[in-house]
Image 1 (spheres, rainbow, N blue to C red):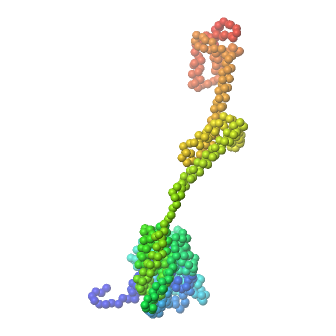
Image 2: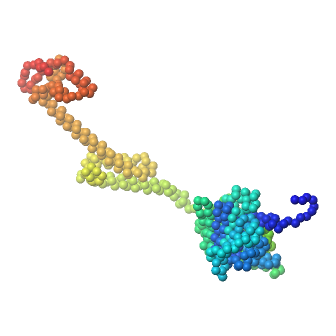
Image 3: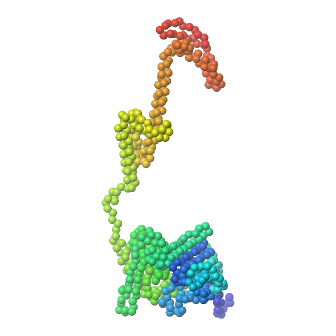
Length: 551
């Protein structure tokens, strides 16, 4: 670069790259320009496909009118457009695009491919353009009527911006989705479909069904629950500007939706606030701030309202040729418009300032749901216990039935004795008066009572068997009535009168017939080898002399 004061002309290629970087500044701008081209072509369906948050691939397809063959060569050239022919046409323009810079700028910043077909074409044509916007190739291909624009490697020709975009791709993708939400809400009778594809999955980010009303689009974008928290905004201010000069009039119509003045209807951020002028998404920061302030003055100051408001103005009352993205708009008599909007929203939200939630006295004494559940459960347990006790008391004489296994298994019934019924009645009475039941009952109270009841019966049955064994033992001990205990000098010996054998002799005979090698038996054997004992036999009813008997 030469120094000094000499002026040099910038070459066309450098100018093209410099201006292109100003037209398309981020991902949302690139997608917006392609969507606006589809809407201007009269499309009824617009499908957007994005891969890896837009880092590698962007595609916008529509079913519009398509591109004529005579326009193939000039389609991506700078400032070639079909919207206007001179500057004065800007006062009447209603299309989204009119500069003729979008496709030309995308050619300089990425690899651009266009596939198009009109109604009179037999086949579609695939067009490939150079970075300067020149047509490189045109080849036939298959496609329905409409146009598909594919952008690959966005910002790769600008190293610094490309690196920044790759690093913040997710954030830029979120901004692009919000821009697409605005078009999906305001465009009536047009279906919008947005796909996002990564390496592992493909998601539908946005989908509308081409509703005829804005509310239908809001339901598809934000959901029916969010739409139910909105109220209609509709006004016509054409009569408010009838001043001394009849020519100085301004007709303004407002149509849209805004959040109800309720603490539960707002949001913690202002990410769902959209303003439009004649169906074009625009940024009106003064009006947005004014609506938020009015909403905070009548409602919760910590939440932000949701609003989608479209202002219908005459095209000569505003200027959209301010920035390349056409989001910044200058409005003639903007202070008048802001005053009318402020008055309208004050009147809209004012009734909410005198609205209160009324609670009756019954609501203060209404029991909690948990208390109702506890009382109901306690009542059910008590009624079941009383009914079971009544059944048992009524069947004492006849006996009660308990479900027992058939043949010892699961199932079957048997009769309970009177004592078992009395024990079970007392057991149930104790369980129903347990601390757990007094505190509100337990859902497993009846099951645990039944379990303890059966366990009590089993214990009683075991105790009865033990008692029966004890009685048998007593009978065995009763058989010792034929045995006589005679005291001798060394010890007491018991002798059976009928057999004439002592218990010691019997043990000796058993020991002789058994071969036990355990230590316990050895100990018993050692005990039995004690010195011989002197003992006597005394017959009942007949006196005999004492005799000495050897082992």
